[in-house]
Length: 348
Image (cartoon, rainbow, N blue to C red; front, side, top):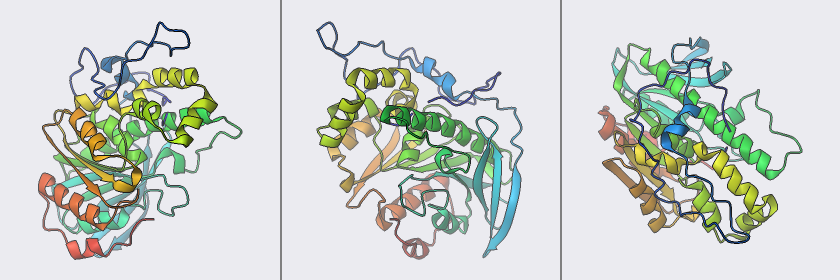
């Protein structure tokens, strides 16, 4: 249950994306029950075109990119930058530039938000991106809104208010990622037809929405996430989640899912025809292979696959190697140093 809306520009211009369909394709959701005493409110199904305006932004607004530090990692340039994001705030990022003139393929990386992890920020994928940079890949690694210095978690807020704040951050992040695509496309050394996205956990959730909103990214690796929030929550037999629903009130939760339907990936999976999709699941997360297959089937991509790993939410070195090989194939990059990939410290 993540959630809310970023500030939209007064003159939003949607970047190239899938043609709006008359109805969404929430392939994983069941119909609400109504007409009985105590039954949940029968909210109307949201329309895919009606959800898209939440991610509009002014694509002509300047990025105002600022470099704050440049260093060399071997023959790779590691540049600390920030650029104007969804509401004109600054998006902190690393930009990795390979040796040579390009045009290079590029990857945008979205990190997990695991509390207590020192790598719950743009550093999560830095070492992995450095290995791929030596194979000729430009990378943009951005901080999610929740780990930026100006993010303030609502103090004293109840659970539902905190969930809504997370949804607001998700909407914000989708636009910040689209602005990141703008940044990459403005570079002469990036091949505009070879831009991929890798997202972990919360940023996999965000990435699934992005895939249904913006078609300039050709390939997605989405790691350790579910993709149908409302169905998952109400179908769960987990005592903790059931207690969470009771605490918030079922009617309030259903109202939330209606109000924030734009933050449920299920409505976007059926609009990913032009993208290639690779889903990576952690067996310790509790998502079954049958559920994983349902997610995969819901993506309308013609080129899609999934893999399960005997691993915790952080996944493992095998998953890292699999996604590097998949990206190598889909982006046409040079040979990757797989030994260096295997030496990266395991995420915890």
